[in-house]
Length: 174
Image (cartoon, rainbow, N blue to C red; front, side, top):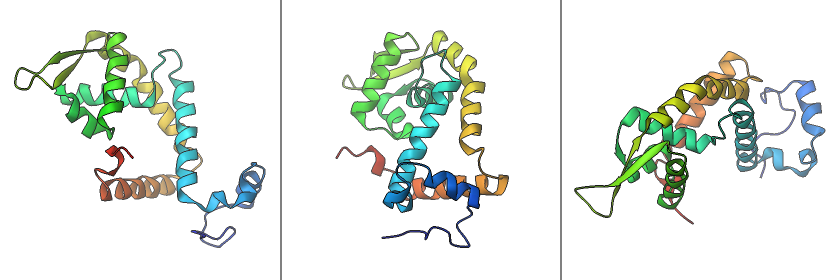
């Protein structure tokens, strides 16, 4: 199944971009016509750019998202953070444990439900966020840099639409 025929008028690619794509090992495999493959590669590229920009802190994009969510939401139950960031419960608990070990968050048992944990951003976590916000923003900018402003807007709009169409799907464990 081909989603966009290579070299078509509306694919938005210049001859230079097509040559660059063909120079990749995967270019001749048909993978570049599969949305899932391209999304996975884009995620890998963004993660690498994020790690370059934020190298000094040793924070992953997911950890940054959790810290940002806690900063914006205030003290929250882990399940609320899980929903906000789009992680399953197990992954959220793992990320929270790593952040707690590094003293970026504090967790306590909820007084309303002993099975539930409430996470709070610590001063260490706040300081890390303050130090890396600009670097994380630079990674986001670098990710979209190959696109012109209209293409950036269109890509962001398309990604939001896809994510909004399947609000709970990413949190399911398969």
